[in-house]
Image (cartoon, rainbow, N blue to C red; front, side):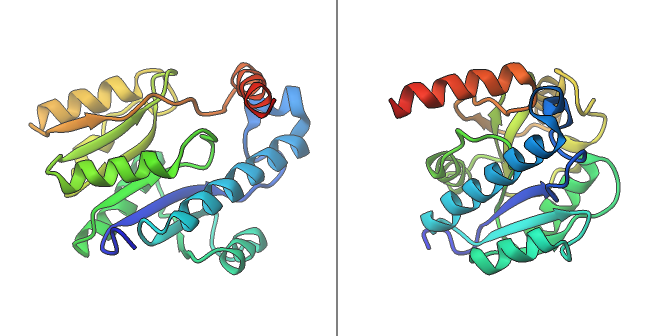
Length: 209
């Protein structure tokens, strides 16, 4: 592995109908939205493990005992970890803290950005190895699809209006307040809404053709 001491953390919910990608349910139905989420997660696990950049951890909600997560563990060379309690920021903060406490630079991603590549993660790891305190992959909707750091900075996860279009803006302001040197990756879309899905679908079809 190129970065054996680093860690890639993938945050995921169990792909249960009605529990994931709820904004896509009017378009795809609850089963269809769950199936899409499952496909996204399996695809990102395949891409990230075959790249052999660093060890991969799948952080599971509600717990690692879910059959789908056990299936992922059998299919891919990954470690399963449970998520802690609290809001999204608290759970991400705790997961990153645990890795960094073991002197491991950490990059955290979700499962719903199908255009995310191993090259994006490699770029984040290179930036961290080169001395950047923080690397963020911005999303056009005002959030981010990737965050990586060398040292734990809890302030990046407090006072953030999760689920709004101000997540990235507020996170970068916190980084500036903390005096952190940060780098931004190429912007990429999460697939959260019907418009996101239809735009991604059209792009995917044009590439395949």
